[in-house]
Image (cartoon, rainbow, N blue to C red; front, side):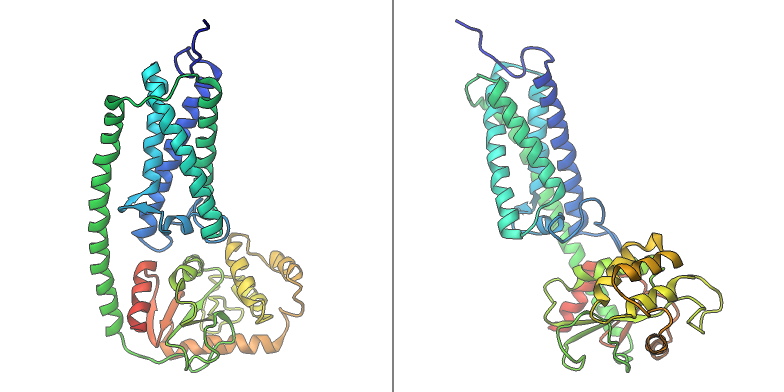
Length: 380
């Protein structure tokens, strides 16, 4: 009778080593996703939650993080991934047939759960989270190792399962309490932001309506319940952050909010109010973005995305890339940009970014969650 084949009890074989590495990978990915979860729900400032995992296109973690399965009873789903990784790592470092038999069930169940989450992401959310996908790969690879190299039958050990249940339940209870406490704190802070916003003087929406729209729910600003006007500069780092922030601010409100862009380059080449050349390529970038109103939103996003590469030569190249000609010497465009800059006089504009929401001026940055609270208060 041949000896029963195992994955973990035959020394540091290649499959055993891979099992250790995949388990460490699951812990790392789960930890990153858990951090991203809290930063997404409770941002600490402008641009919080950005990083490798951010994004709202097909590849991006934000859809998954904020979805119905992003947490279970306010415990991040990713935390369960950390626990599964710990289960695999402990079973690999302290091997026994009993541990392997118990872990086999957990690893296979985890792989099935990953299949369900993968289908939910693609079909239900229309996209995939990069780090979630990496976790799925680690999970499937680990399940394959158990399937191929372990002949141990699945058997639940009450003692071992109970120990890991404690590892899951005790931090889970803390996370549940922490999430609810942060929600209450955030709600209180949002009320303060709303109150401060309502106390600001109503200076009215810009008299000159910009033809450059980031979101257009209504043909006229007079029809829109919320009008956001952004005075911005393509070389301003905080303006870049606001440009990334806007899609999250208006998510779910796209049919109720008009967002218009006002060029306000801090560049003395086109802005007579600027006394020193802070951003020498801002005017030329504005000319490129203003060249075609139909392409504005796309060009706007690309210029901010490539902000670190701004130069006169690159702007010429990007103009060719977008098929835009006669942007930089077009007097009509320069006159329109001058009008957007003049619109800032209505608000005694001094810096970028400056955001006007229904006539009230916000200078600098406000975290996304509180900006959303302001919009919600206006819609009510």
